[in-house]
Image (cartoon, rainbow, N blue to C red):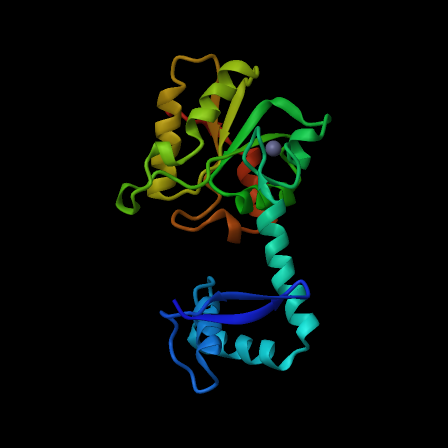
Length: 224
Ligand SMILES: [Zn+2]
């Protein structure tokens, strides 16, 4: 494979040239950068070209700071050993906070959902991040999520309440139902967020008041 020479941490290294990259009048490395940027969420081809032009115009140290920031989070940030929130240590800040109520666990799909609920400032328990939701059409089954770890946690860590805060979508509700079935014979109260949030929307974009109301008005998951 053809290689190109780049400088990293003051050393000249060789890396694979990008055979798959879209060709570009400035060269294939620019085409590759645009290809990579265009894979980011919310970034179309035009925005990717603008970002690439900015990176080409800025100083080498500025561009390296961005590259190093990306490398740093990829090497330092990992899932919390207890709740799977993102952390730079074995346990995340929330799990290490001794003021939190450890018997109450709020189940969310993604770390960004946890951030939205924390901003509401009304839930003082711990969290459990599933890492997604059950989605057969996208090939995501229960084994791809942290559901086993949640069940183990409920059975070994004295969890008394599970607050289901999966997104109010078909797949989010299905995931909550799947988990509640697994825990049907355990002595744990299962609640879910009240429906103050429009069905089909996502937690990430709900405002703080809406989320606070939803937590206050939570109700038993089994509606009999
Ligand atoms: Zn944690």
